[in-house]
Image (tube, rainbow, N blue to C red; front, side, top):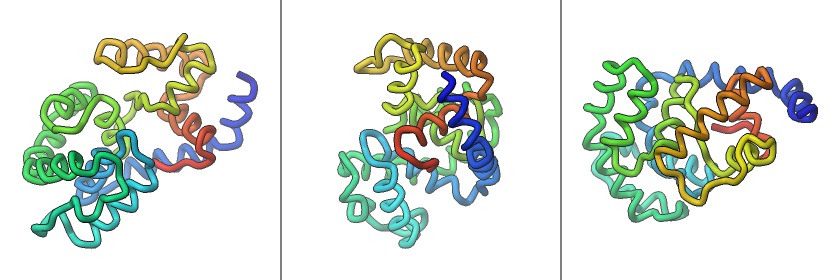
Amino acid sequence: MKHLLEVYGEKKGIIKKRLNDFSKVPEDEYFYELAFCLLTPQSNAKTCDKAVQHLKAREFHKNNINPGDFINNVRFNNNKAKYLIEMKQKFPEIMNVIRTIKNPEELRIWFVENVKGIGLKEAGHFLRNIGYRNLAILDRHILKNLKKFGVIEEAPKTLTKKNYFEIEGKFKEFSKKVNIPMDELDLLFWSMETGEIFK
């Protein structure tokens, strides 16, 4: 625990700045933030970001191109290409919902139920990346660290909605115990695993 607090002390400034950057993402970037989160399951974040940059350079959001041609290095690229196409078609509705539903938990559930390829983790990730707070992003880095610090006994092989919310609750309790906001802990754990603070 002492080591965690020491590392947080070192990285606190850059972590807070990164979260502040997320809160300033303009609406015209939301499409590609969501595209990024659709690509990330079981894939390297940097690889996904490069794929999104290819899509952005070709203005996928308004041009009739096949996204599958530009995400070859992403795992399950065929399925994810289909998700991107569906998301693109639905994006005006998505933006309307973002502007209408103000409660983060309610908004997260809407994404899970209405955007194919998006689970609780991806929905939380997207919402965090556009400035929402206090939603857990339970990826393998976070689960590994929650186990390491005794917050959970084991990282579940599959995350059901029920155990996702249970672990999120324990994560929130732990964040209060160590006096580090959950969103900051998320980026701290991620940086301890990968050596950097990304998104």
